[in-house]
Amino acid sequence: MEIRHLTESYAVSPQIAPEDVAALKAAGFVRVICNRPDREIPPELHSEAMRKAVEAAGLEFVDNQIVPGDFSPAILARQAEAMAADGPVFAYCASGNRSSIAWALTQAGKRPADELIGAAARWGYNLEQLRPMLG
Image 1 (tube, rainbow, N blue to C red):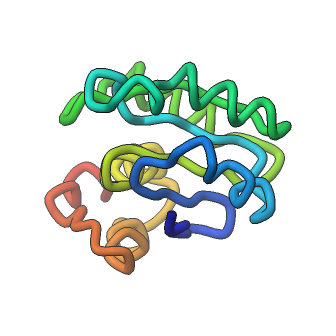
Image 2 (cartoon, rainbow, N blue to C red):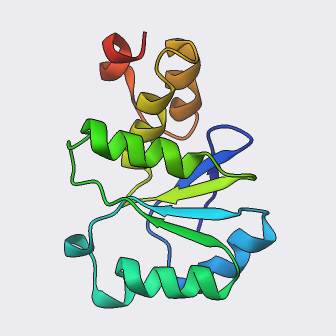
């Protein structure tokens, strides 16, 4: 697992497994957001299995599954609410891209578009196509 910090308080990564949760706790995260739909992964990685592992470690778990391309207002509102934690938040999906897009869209108008695009680009996520929505 590679923790990819977009900010000091928000990081993303590709799919995690229950055995990765201890490292997230050790890294200081307080909340984990699942942005990956269960239909994409085997049962041992489904959101409920991950919820059990995350909560057993004493962290909060938020299930906000994002179907590719579905960044509806409801999805973004849940993401923004989940990101508002008293401490660092970690989000995962298939590659980290959806979690990066959701973050950037929730920050539109609050941070410059160049900053949002640049933070994601450091990890190989190309959000340039979102520029009109971020500025």
